[in-house]
Length: 139
Image (cartoon, rainbow, N blue to C red; front, side, top):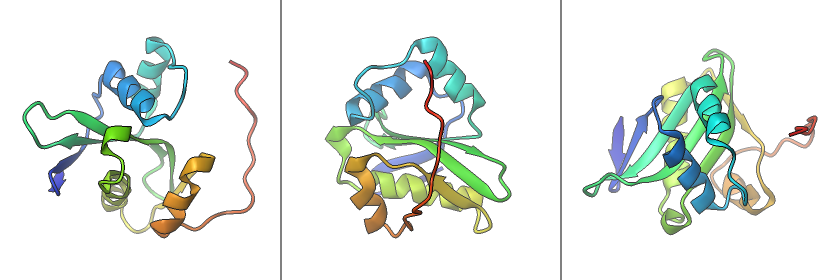
């Protein structure tokens, strides 16, 4: 757990699905939320769940990072979302910094960016990888 600029960053493996869904929706990460059952499965199967909460009373959740990792070689960031009301405060950069701190220097971080976020990742120094492949979900 660490605090920077009025934001509390923490590992939060017991994050509630409703809070997770709220931040994903508020961030514009998706237009149609997933079912609570799927959200719970996503959280319970993640190896790394980091949150960013305002230090004000109530500790409102404004950012979430969910990662899948072996804690040895690579961590795939499945979601990195910041509520639109808190974007521009350095929270995305802070959560990635906290992930790097917790994972250590031997673990690479990979993610797939949405088109609107490419500039952010380039700005914070991530390297764009030209070749990536995937099979789309069927449901």
